[in-house]
Length: 126
Image (cartoon, rainbow, N blue to C red; front, side, top):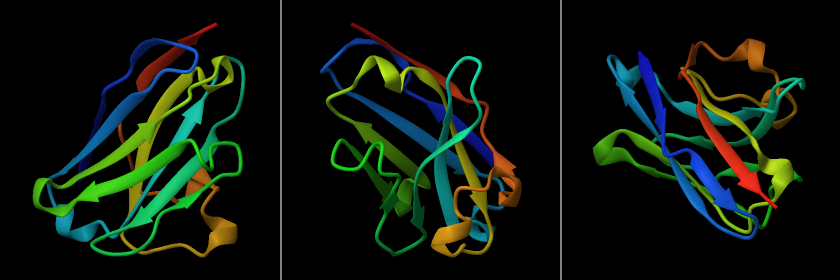
């Protein structure tokens, strides 16, 4: 399985970006995807998750109401729509995946994910 994240860039505070995560290879093995982010000098932070092919997304409190995770199963792609961006959202964003879903309490543990994308940088200017 390969994950390829894209869509990062520079945006002003209050702006929007949409990140994409393309799943390729043995994508039928992937049933659970998540977005993480890592700001400079900080640890990986869980952003949200979604179950394939169906299931509602789940969000970290820090992004709830501003970020939306969606999927296009036909394109094997998961999206992270980010609205009302803040300078604190500046980070490298990673998509991660695993074969089986995780309980909510475990979803924030990056060590439980089997596959990772390369990351895409999001910079929010004030």
